[in-house]
Length: 343
Image 1 (cartoon, rainbow, N blue to C red):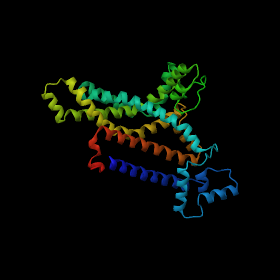
Image 2: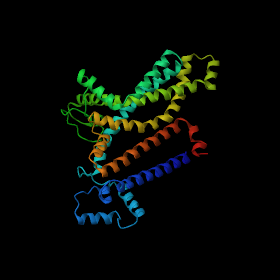
Image 3: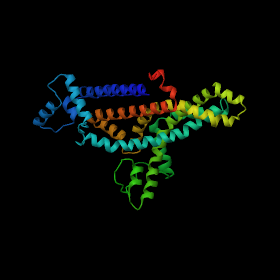
Image 4: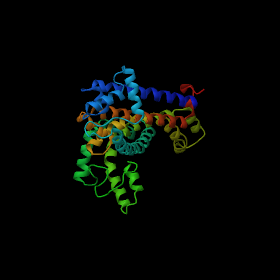
């Protein structure tokens, strides 16, 4: 397990280094002065620019400039937004929890819906149920998320009036920002209308989360189906049949737990796709997350925010992948073997 951890740590450091090189390179590729693109100081006086140039080692070679940029990144200095002239680090800390909350809720929906349906398709292999599930999964994966989001608002918000069309919570409720996760902040609040606010927050998150969850759920269906079919063909499953166990006992006692291990291995890889879908959905549903903020920064040509936002989002996605690897290694000790150099 030590070598497994060291390999993951080396990969994490190498990936962060590549991401920071890309982020630093963008300051040269974007229009305008490279120093202003890095810092966002549009209104700086010549004296302030001279101080910034010295701080970022602008008189030195590009390698020294890069390591100076790295020192600012690791100290939490991501510059200021060109559009709002506010600290980008503060903006990200304020908006990222909302994106995490929406993504986790959508991930939970996709997992709860997709994996069991995939197991059902595998159990009913080559039957009508299997063909119907695969057809529906293919259609669900093909639907563009922006069109699905608009259709969901038109149907469930405007025509039926069941769910809100945007935002995190109604303006009637004043919830103190503690963690940034609205559902958690509502529970932590001491307001007399806590449970009404919690119900309202759930109503706001269900529709965008369901829209995001459609595509990952269809992928989980196919992953779970393939994993279950593979497990059902293994020798130990055939041995349980020879022992006289019923089909239900084989499925619930042996097949599901082993198929889940194979599914977990690939689930984390879908998180990057889910974050991308969340960014688009945040714009459609006016969700106050980092995805909407990053897209607005692109429209406003806020180059400093674009560099820092991409760096933070990519780092967050990679951390999720590492957590998935550790989860898979914990469930399947064989994963820590020669492939990861732990012998």
